[in-house]
Length: 174
Image 1 (tube, rainbow, N blue to C red):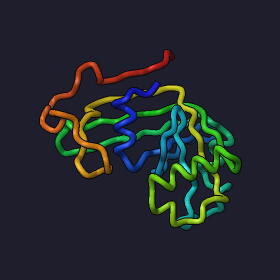
Image 2: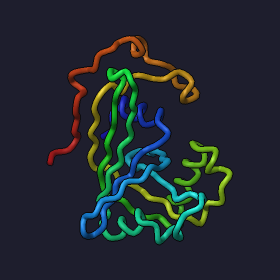
Image 3: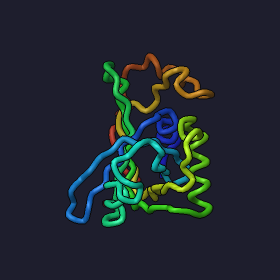
């Protein structure tokens, strides 16, 4: 479902935007940390101060009422030949405990040292079961040093043009 280019782009980004809507279709968007494993994107509720308990957060309530969600991960640059984004859509599930919950938190902790320092084992994880992928723009530009172990693609820093075949891609009909 996700191409290698899209997977690499997601691995290079640190922040996504989670869009949810309640039963009346009132939208909400929040920035989130994320980790991808196979065809599921994981987001944990972290231990930063919140206005409400984890289960009362609007994103969690919205998913309980309406599990259809979208996540956008983007790159902005003043050089517009470097713009790109990947949008993931699907059904979200709240994981309160269990093996998948624990594995997801371990994956997120390995990606974000800040989470490793927090007590999050008791907090829910959002599991987005990816059903549809759309991407646009220059997904190949790699910023050296942004992600350890990932090197720039040959010519990607100086290409200056978008691949016309990559303007939009949608893996599933409708």
